[in-house]
Image (cartoon, rainbow, N blue to C red):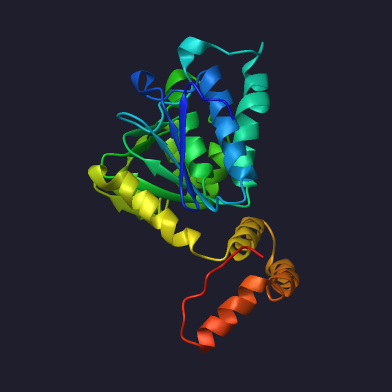
Length: 260
């Protein structure tokens, strides 16, 4: 992959780190950042050596959202910009076989908040916050923010945050269950990458299927989920990784998973 203009990409072991790199614009999304981030996510998703991805932002914040100075980019309407540029990268995170961890410092605003919430897990610095500012400039939430907020918070709390265009500070994000971990700002990336490294030692196929099951469980009923869990368990119990772990358990050893 050729060098990206607005995204840094690195890999250590089974962990890839993708960092949005427009710090002077608070990592707001212009056309180039949308294209570069999509390319970086595709690189991680198609690399079999990557098991966990950390997504962060250079400078003072995660992302200030859509770059208003960039207008609509390559498309005549905002609908097309969302559907043709934002939606593919969001779906690439949501539908990935890998685990994605967003590492948030400063603002995760607008579409930046939606990108962060699409990740499977979230680590936030103590100076971090979500800012759903859409209503304050006469707009509606987008990028799937409504989906995430209602499922995590329920209708009434989600409505309060959206219509009041609230900033939700780190401690409240933790209390509301919007994030998984809260850490000091100067420890953010080391905490996120350390967690990613521990998760990357797990069984990749089990993580892939558990991600699929938990996403399906948000909408399916109990009967359907028991059936789906049973059929999926039938797959994982036949894997090399399960056999390795089974033997390691009886030998009191730590299993080494290979994703087969």
